[in-house]
Image (tube, rainbow, N blue to C red; front, top):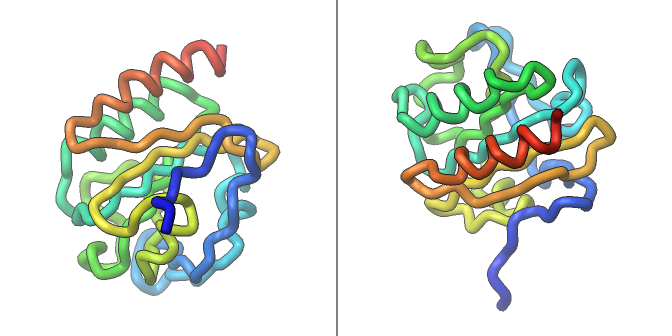
Length: 159
């Protein structure tokens, strides 16, 4: 069996194969969604989706802060983080989070596999264009070196 590959630039961003929970201000505001793309493209030109693998969402991991810093540099780029439901640690916004970050919880690792990740420790970053197509995708390692190359790409692409 061939190993999955991250969704490729130029392809339509696929819908989530399993329902995702939209995490907003409090647990009373949870919304289940299987139509991910309309939710993501609701109010911004481009969306940066960070699949965080097995990291715990409520711990202010340095990778989260690097991702937020990357997105903050580009006004037309909205950050979205997809975490695993069992690693969310309470269905509420993390204390470290800014208001403009969209948080989603995947109920199954099969959701990540639907985007080309292995459903284990593997993390990925996908930039989605306003028309729903993937503009950029890359695996993210624990050091976060991907964010440097992504920033260079975004500086050329969004300028």
